[in-house]
Image (cartoon, rainbow, N blue to C red):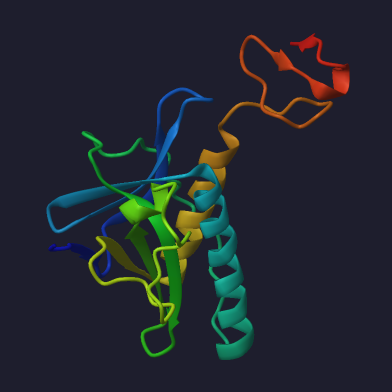
Length: 190
């Protein structure tokens, strides 16, 4: 089985974005460069963790290697994802690395293994016996400057915050019609 590695070193644009209304959004990572656009689908929690871990990676590079932490850009990318959004694969694993020599961050999004969804499968992760991720899975690999990482994180936080507002009592997302709030003894809350 052949696999593809979509490499962007560096991309013209690398962003997290969504398609659909709040509560029904599909999250994507999208890279553009060299006349091509690659979009991969992932879960909201993966976008949140990616942004959090990228911030931690920058802080670690600052403390260990003296990286000057970038400020937020004056130019903010609030543009929608490039259309048409065609999902290349669904992300199962995300990997991060810091390249000291090139002062850059490498983000790798690896496709979910189809066996992960098999209820009768013996393993929960796509790793082989040695703990390695199989080479036959599609990958999106992006190399970003520290400023590119800061811009990605800032936008990811805006995308995450643009969803449904939380219920002031229980913290669960409020739909436009409200929700059954456990803190309100199951009564409908608007």
